[in-house]
Length: 317
Image (cartoon, rainbow, N blue to C red):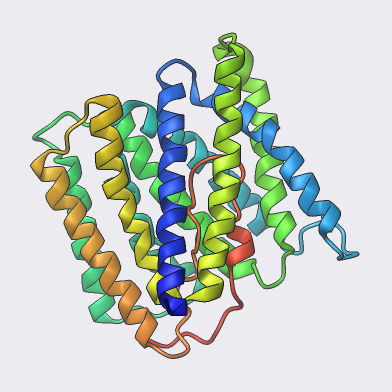
């Protein structure tokens, strides 16, 4: 098995673990508020971060080089986690993924004002087609749009913004700064809100919260291994395999079925995302806003995405 094949296999495993992570979120979300789940998953993630700090050989401080961009990214990351957790709790898994898959398309759009990256007409058309796919999934005017749908869309927007900011400042900021600040902000904010929504958790549910943190950590490590072994253009499309996991998990565990509009819309979004990914992979020197976003921008408080970003290159498309 060649390196690209090994990398693709590892990516499939990583995104399968991420999908399992989201199943646990949905399971707990049927009983507990996303605020409570995020609070405890953040709390249980701190030992993992402390381990990374102990192994960090750098003598630099934890003070950000770009405080305002770091603050904005922190706010976006906290909003993304809260909205995504809520969306997974109330929407079918496949429908939630279909909407969240718009994030790479939004990254391409946001790269224009934030990174100054030009987007030529082919990629622009692909983005518009992909966003049309989101409209197909949401079906405004045909079905009632719930707060869950808006939460999933908000998670995609805030997650894309956070990812583009990492692309902008990631070369200057320490990875641990990009990781730790959103965790601290999540912990403080959720702790302040927790008394209003708290429900006592039995030990088995608290253990499931620990599973959320462990799955996010392990999936991130597997994804790092995938990108070390294979080209980004090979690994990045594997994220769309989550729709298969979502369909299977949704049917077996929650009695969910994927309707035709969601299936068609997801297909349009995925096709557009794949076009952009493959086009970026063929373009030398591209900033590749999609390819450099190598971990999901939503989910539990512990994410390894800041550790996966490469240096910025001169944009060409």
